[in-house]
Image (tube, rainbow, N blue to C red; front, side, top):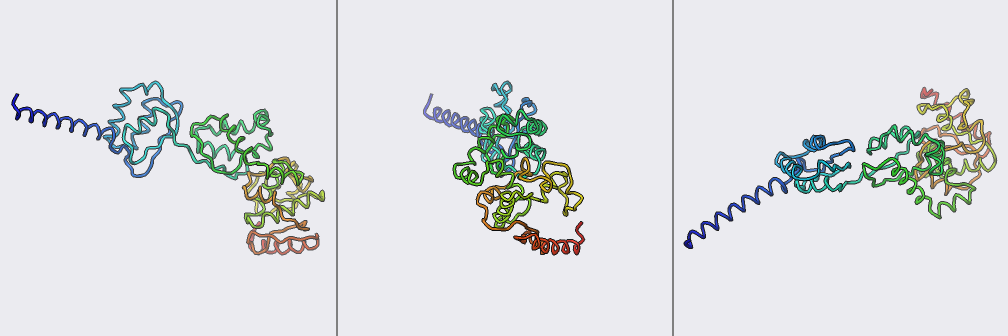
Length: 341
Protein backbone atom coordinates (compact mmCIF):
# COMPACT_ATOMS: atom_id res chain seq x y z
CA UNK A 1 0.00 0.00 0.00
CA UNK A 2 1.40 3.33 -1.04
CA UNK A 3 1.86 6.25 1.33
CA UNK A 4 -0.96 8.08 -0.43
CA UNK A 5 -3.30 5.12 -0.02
CA UNK A 6 -2.44 4.85 3.68
CA UNK A 7 -3.25 8.52 4.17
CA UNK A 8 -6.56 8.17 2.37
CA UNK A 9 -7.39 5.12 4.48
CA UNK A 10 -6.47 6.90 7.70
CA UNK A 11 -8.49 9.95 6.70
CA UNK A 12 -11.52 7.78 5.90
CA UNK A 13 -11.16 5.92 9.22
CA UNK A 14 -10.86 9.19 11.10
CA UNK A 15 -13.95 10.52 9.34
CA UNK A 16 -15.90 7.37 10.22
CA UNK A 17 -14.82 7.66 13.83
CA UNK A 18 -15.81 11.33 13.86
CA UNK A 19 -19.22 10.50 12.44
CA UNK A 20 -19.61 7.64 14.92
CA UNK A 21 -18.75 9.77 17.92
CA UNK A 22 -20.89 12.60 16.57
CA UNK A 23 -23.90 10.28 16.36
CA UNK A 24 -23.06 8.91 19.81
CA UNK A 25 -22.89 12.40 21.25
CA UNK A 26 -26.08 13.53 19.47
CA UNK A 27 -28.24 10.69 20.76
CA UNK A 28 -26.72 10.05 24.18
CA UNK A 29 -25.02 13.22 25.41
CA UNK A 30 -26.70 16.12 23.62
CA UNK A 31 -29.47 17.90 25.53
CA UNK A 32 -32.27 15.48 26.41
CA UNK A 33 -34.74 17.99 27.82
CA UNK A 34 -37.01 19.98 25.52
CA UNK A 35 -36.98 22.90 27.96
CA UNK A 36 -34.29 25.13 29.42
CA UNK A 37 -35.65 24.72 32.95
CA UNK A 38 -35.43 21.63 35.14
CA UNK A 39 -38.33 19.23 34.69
CA UNK A 40 -39.31 16.27 36.84
CA UNK A 41 -40.63 12.82 36.09
CA UNK A 42 -42.53 10.93 38.83
CA UNK A 43 -42.28 7.15 38.66
CA UNK A 44 -44.77 5.21 40.80
CA UNK A 45 -44.39 1.77 42.32
CA UNK A 46 -46.88 0.33 39.84
CA UNK A 47 -45.22 1.82 36.73
CA UNK A 48 -43.84 -0.49 34.06
CA UNK A 49 -41.35 0.35 31.33
CA UNK A 50 -44.11 1.46 28.96
CA UNK A 51 -45.67 3.85 31.46
CA UNK A 52 -42.24 5.26 32.33
CA UNK A 53 -41.56 5.96 28.66
CA UNK A 54 -45.03 7.53 28.39
CA UNK A 55 -44.22 9.88 31.28
CA UNK A 56 -40.75 10.81 30.02
CA UNK A 57 -41.59 11.36 26.34
CA UNK A 58 -43.36 14.75 26.72
CA UNK A 59 -40.24 16.12 28.46
CA UNK A 60 -37.71 14.96 25.87
CA UNK A 61 -36.29 15.93 22.50
CA UNK A 62 -36.78 13.38 19.73
CA UNK A 63 -33.08 12.46 19.53
CA UNK A 64 -32.84 12.28 23.32
CA UNK A 65 -35.82 9.95 23.48
CA UNK A 66 -34.29 7.72 20.80
CA UNK A 67 -31.09 7.50 22.82
CA UNK A 68 -32.99 6.66 26.01
CA UNK A 69 -35.01 3.94 24.28
CA UNK A 70 -31.80 2.39 22.98
CA UNK A 71 -30.31 2.34 26.47
CA UNK A 72 -33.49 0.86 27.93
CA UNK A 73 -33.63 -1.92 25.31
CA UNK A 74 -30.05 -2.97 26.02
CA UNK A 75 -30.31 -2.99 29.81
CA UNK A 76 -32.10 -4.71 32.66
CA UNK A 77 -34.10 -1.57 33.49
CA UNK A 78 -37.54 -3.04 32.56
CA UNK A 79 -37.04 -5.65 35.31
CA UNK A 80 -35.87 -3.25 38.03
CA UNK A 81 -37.82 -0.02 37.79
CA UNK A 82 -37.28 2.27 40.77
CA UNK A 83 -39.97 4.64 41.91
CA UNK A 84 -39.09 8.23 42.69
CA UNK A 85 -38.93 11.86 41.61
CA UNK A 86 -36.21 12.35 39.03
CA UNK A 87 -34.84 15.63 37.72
CA UNK A 88 -34.32 16.18 34.01
CA UNK A 89 -32.06 19.19 33.74
CA UNK A 90 -31.48 21.24 30.62
CA UNK A 91 -27.86 20.10 30.22
CA UNK A 92 -28.55 16.40 30.69
CA UNK A 93 -28.09 13.91 27.89
CA UNK A 94 -30.01 10.65 27.51
CA UNK A 95 -27.20 8.75 29.23
CA UNK A 96 -27.37 11.00 32.32
CA UNK A 97 -31.17 10.69 32.50
CA UNK A 98 -31.00 6.91 32.07
CA UNK A 99 -28.31 6.56 34.72
CA UNK A 100 -30.39 8.61 37.14
CA UNK A 101 -33.65 6.68 36.79
CA UNK A 102 -31.93 3.29 36.58
CA UNK A 103 -29.90 3.81 39.75
CA UNK A 104 -32.67 5.53 41.70
CA UNK A 105 -30.80 8.83 42.02
CA UNK A 106 -33.78 10.89 43.10
CA UNK A 107 -34.21 14.61 43.61
CA UNK A 108 -35.81 15.20 47.03
CA UNK A 109 -38.97 17.26 47.49
CA UNK A 110 -38.81 20.43 49.58
CA UNK A 111 -41.83 19.67 51.76
CA UNK A 112 -43.08 22.50 53.96
CA UNK A 113 -45.47 21.31 56.67
CA UNK A 114 -48.48 23.67 56.49
CA UNK A 115 -50.19 25.25 59.49
CA UNK A 116 -53.54 23.58 58.80
CA UNK A 117 -56.35 23.17 61.30
CA UNK A 118 -57.25 19.52 60.77
CA UNK A 119 -55.43 16.30 60.01
CA UNK A 120 -57.48 15.55 56.91
CA UNK A 121 -56.16 18.80 55.41
CA UNK A 122 -52.61 17.84 56.36
CA UNK A 123 -53.04 14.41 54.76
CA UNK A 124 -54.48 16.00 51.63
CA UNK A 125 -51.53 18.38 51.36
CA UNK A 126 -48.86 15.74 51.95
CA UNK A 127 -50.57 13.43 49.48
CA UNK A 128 -50.35 16.15 46.82
CA UNK A 129 -46.59 16.51 47.38
CA UNK A 130 -45.46 12.93 48.00
CA UNK A 131 -46.34 9.47 46.71
CA UNK A 132 -48.08 8.73 50.03
CA UNK A 133 -51.80 8.10 49.65
CA UNK A 134 -53.69 10.87 51.47
CA UNK A 135 -56.45 8.51 52.66
CA UNK A 136 -53.89 6.12 54.14
CA UNK A 137 -52.10 8.96 55.92
CA UNK A 138 -55.35 10.32 57.35
CA UNK A 139 -56.34 6.82 58.49
CA UNK A 140 -53.00 6.51 60.30
CA UNK A 141 -53.40 9.90 61.98
CA UNK A 142 -56.91 8.88 63.07
CA UNK A 143 -55.77 5.56 64.52
CA UNK A 144 -55.08 5.53 68.27
CA UNK A 145 -52.56 2.69 68.09
CA UNK A 146 -50.53 4.45 65.40
CA UNK A 147 -50.56 7.75 67.29
CA UNK A 148 -49.55 6.05 70.55
CA UNK A 149 -46.58 4.51 68.74
CA UNK A 150 -45.15 8.02 68.47
CA UNK A 151 -46.21 9.18 71.93
CA UNK A 152 -49.47 10.96 71.05
CA UNK A 153 -53.18 10.28 70.66
CA UNK A 154 -55.59 11.27 67.90
CA UNK A 155 -56.23 14.66 69.54
CA UNK A 156 -52.55 15.53 70.00
CA UNK A 157 -50.89 13.94 66.93
CA UNK A 158 -50.78 17.38 65.26
CA UNK A 159 -48.08 18.26 67.82
CA UNK A 160 -45.65 15.97 66.01
CA UNK A 161 -45.62 18.13 62.88
CA UNK A 162 -43.30 21.13 63.11
CA UNK A 163 -43.92 23.57 60.22
CA UNK A 164 -40.41 23.64 58.80
CA UNK A 165 -39.26 22.75 55.30
CA UNK A 166 -37.76 19.28 54.90
CA UNK A 167 -35.92 17.51 52.08
CA UNK A 168 -37.86 14.28 51.64
CA UNK A 169 -37.78 11.69 48.90
CA UNK A 170 -41.04 11.67 46.97
CA UNK A 171 -41.51 7.89 47.27
CA UNK A 172 -40.99 7.74 51.05
CA UNK A 173 -43.23 5.18 52.72
CA UNK A 174 -45.96 6.18 55.16
CA UNK A 175 -44.14 4.64 58.13
CA UNK A 176 -40.84 6.27 57.20
CA UNK A 177 -42.57 9.63 56.78
CA UNK A 178 -44.10 9.47 60.26
CA UNK A 179 -40.77 8.36 61.71
CA UNK A 180 -39.08 11.31 60.01
CA UNK A 181 -41.63 13.76 61.42
CA UNK A 182 -41.12 12.31 64.92
CA UNK A 183 -37.35 12.66 64.56
CA UNK A 184 -37.69 16.28 63.39
CA UNK A 185 -40.04 17.04 66.29
CA UNK A 186 -37.57 15.58 68.80
CA UNK A 187 -34.82 17.69 67.27
CA UNK A 188 -36.96 20.84 67.44
CA UNK A 189 -37.61 20.33 71.15
CA UNK A 190 -34.05 21.02 72.17
CA UNK A 191 -32.87 21.50 75.74
CA UNK A 192 -33.55 25.25 75.70
CA UNK A 193 -37.17 24.90 74.59
CA UNK A 194 -37.81 22.02 76.97
CA UNK A 195 -36.43 24.00 79.91
CA UNK A 196 -38.62 26.99 79.08
CA UNK A 197 -41.71 24.78 78.81
CA UNK A 198 -40.88 23.02 82.07
CA UNK A 199 -40.52 26.34 83.89
CA UNK A 200 -44.13 27.10 82.88
CA UNK A 201 -45.35 23.70 84.03
CA UNK A 202 -45.80 22.72 80.39
CA UNK A 203 -44.63 19.94 78.14
CA UNK A 204 -44.44 20.10 74.34
CA UNK A 205 -48.11 19.18 73.88
CA UNK A 206 -49.37 21.89 76.22
CA UNK A 207 -47.02 24.43 74.65
CA UNK A 208 -48.19 23.62 71.13
CA UNK A 209 -51.83 23.57 72.21
CA UNK A 210 -51.59 27.08 73.63
CA UNK A 211 -49.54 28.22 70.62
CA UNK A 212 -52.30 27.01 68.30
CA UNK A 213 -54.79 29.28 70.09
CA UNK A 214 -52.37 32.21 70.01
CA UNK A 215 -51.85 31.76 66.27
CA UNK A 216 -55.59 31.69 65.68
CA UNK A 217 -56.04 34.87 67.69
CA UNK A 218 -53.44 36.96 65.86
CA UNK A 219 -51.16 36.86 62.84
CA UNK A 220 -49.13 39.72 64.29
CA UNK A 221 -45.90 38.02 65.40
CA UNK A 222 -44.92 40.99 67.59
CA UNK A 223 -48.18 40.71 69.54
CA UNK A 224 -48.12 36.96 70.02
CA UNK A 225 -46.05 37.01 73.25
CA UNK A 226 -48.63 39.43 74.71
CA UNK A 227 -51.52 37.14 73.76
CA UNK A 228 -49.65 34.11 75.10
CA UNK A 229 -48.98 35.94 78.36
CA UNK A 230 -52.66 36.82 78.74
CA UNK A 231 -53.78 33.21 78.31
CA UNK A 232 -51.03 31.98 80.61
CA UNK A 233 -52.27 34.38 83.28
CA UNK A 234 -55.74 32.88 82.90
CA UNK A 235 -54.39 29.37 83.28
CA UNK A 236 -52.50 30.30 86.44
CA UNK A 237 -55.67 31.93 87.83
CA UNK A 238 -57.76 28.85 86.96
CA UNK A 239 -59.95 31.01 84.73
CA UNK A 240 -61.53 29.59 81.56
CA UNK A 241 -59.51 30.61 78.52
CA UNK A 242 -62.71 31.68 76.71
CA UNK A 243 -60.90 31.61 73.38
CA UNK A 244 -63.26 32.12 70.45
CA UNK A 245 -61.10 30.07 68.02
CA UNK A 246 -61.73 26.98 70.14
CA UNK A 247 -65.46 27.40 69.54
CA UNK A 248 -64.87 27.47 65.79
CA UNK A 249 -62.84 24.29 66.14
CA UNK A 250 -65.50 22.63 68.28
CA UNK A 251 -68.17 23.52 65.72
CA UNK A 252 -65.82 22.63 62.81
CA UNK A 253 -66.92 25.87 61.16
CA UNK A 254 -63.84 27.93 60.38
CA UNK A 255 -65.75 30.44 58.26
CA UNK A 256 -67.33 32.07 61.32
CA UNK A 257 -66.51 35.76 61.64
CA UNK A 258 -68.45 36.30 64.87
CA UNK A 259 -69.06 34.06 67.86
CA UNK A 260 -72.55 34.44 69.34
CA UNK A 261 -73.69 33.52 72.84
CA UNK A 262 -75.74 30.55 71.67
CA UNK A 263 -72.59 28.97 70.20
CA UNK A 264 -70.84 28.92 73.57
CA UNK A 265 -72.86 25.94 74.79
CA UNK A 266 -71.49 23.51 72.19
CA UNK A 267 -70.72 20.23 73.94
CA UNK A 268 -67.05 19.67 73.24
CA UNK A 269 -63.84 19.27 75.23
CA UNK A 270 -62.51 22.06 73.02
CA UNK A 271 -65.09 24.52 74.36
CA UNK A 272 -62.90 26.76 76.50
CA UNK A 273 -65.92 28.72 77.71
CA UNK A 274 -67.34 25.68 79.50
CA UNK A 275 -64.08 23.96 80.41
CA UNK A 276 -61.14 25.33 82.34
CA UNK A 277 -57.56 24.64 81.38
CA UNK A 278 -56.19 23.89 77.96
CA UNK A 279 -58.20 21.91 75.42
CA UNK A 280 -57.10 18.29 74.95
CA UNK A 281 -55.00 19.13 71.89
CA UNK A 282 -54.08 21.85 69.42
CA UNK A 283 -56.70 23.48 67.20
CA UNK A 284 -54.19 23.74 64.37
CA UNK A 285 -50.54 23.13 63.59
CA UNK A 286 -49.08 26.34 65.03
CA UNK A 287 -46.28 28.40 63.57
CA UNK A 288 -42.82 28.30 65.10
CA UNK A 289 -43.34 31.98 65.95
CA UNK A 290 -46.44 30.95 67.89
CA UNK A 291 -44.61 28.18 69.76
CA UNK A 292 -41.72 30.46 70.70
CA UNK A 293 -44.17 33.21 71.68
CA UNK A 294 -45.60 30.86 74.31
CA UNK A 295 -42.16 29.88 75.56
CA UNK A 296 -41.07 33.53 75.65
CA UNK A 297 -44.46 34.96 76.64
CA UNK A 298 -44.70 38.53 77.87
CA UNK A 299 -45.07 38.93 81.61
CA UNK A 300 -47.94 41.31 82.46
CA UNK A 301 -51.15 41.49 84.49
CA UNK A 302 -53.68 41.39 81.64
CA UNK A 303 -56.49 38.84 81.87
CA UNK A 304 -58.69 39.96 78.98
CA UNK A 305 -58.29 40.95 75.37
CA UNK A 306 -60.52 41.95 72.51
CA UNK A 307 -59.80 42.61 68.86
CA UNK A 308 -59.29 46.28 68.10
CA UNK A 309 -62.15 48.10 66.45
CA UNK A 310 -59.85 49.30 63.63
CA UNK A 311 -59.57 45.70 62.32
CA UNK A 312 -55.79 45.99 62.35
CA UNK A 313 -55.47 42.45 63.65
CA UNK A 314 -54.17 43.70 66.98
CA UNK A 315 -55.92 43.62 70.35
CA UNK A 316 -56.91 45.82 73.24
CA UNK A 317 -55.79 44.24 76.51
CA UNK A 318 -57.47 44.79 79.89
CA UNK A 319 -56.79 43.93 83.50
CA UNK A 320 -60.43 44.16 84.66
CA UNK A 321 -63.66 42.77 83.29
CA UNK A 322 -65.23 46.26 83.27
CA UNK A 323 -62.47 47.58 81.04
CA UNK A 324 -62.81 44.54 78.82
CA UNK A 325 -66.56 45.13 78.37
CA UNK A 326 -65.83 48.63 77.08
CA UNK A 327 -63.34 47.25 74.55
CA UNK A 328 -65.81 44.53 73.51
CA UNK A 329 -68.54 47.09 72.96
CA UNK A 330 -66.31 49.15 70.68
CA UNK A 331 -65.47 46.08 68.63
CA UNK A 332 -69.10 44.97 68.45
CA UNK A 333 -70.16 48.37 67.13
CA UNK A 334 -67.41 48.19 64.49
CA UNK A 335 -68.64 44.76 63.38
CA UNK A 336 -72.23 45.98 63.15
CA UNK A 337 -71.16 49.04 61.17
CA UNK A 338 -69.52 46.75 58.60
CA UNK A 339 -72.45 44.37 58.52
CA UNK A 340 -70.33 41.46 59.68
CA UNK A 341 -72.48 38.66 61.05
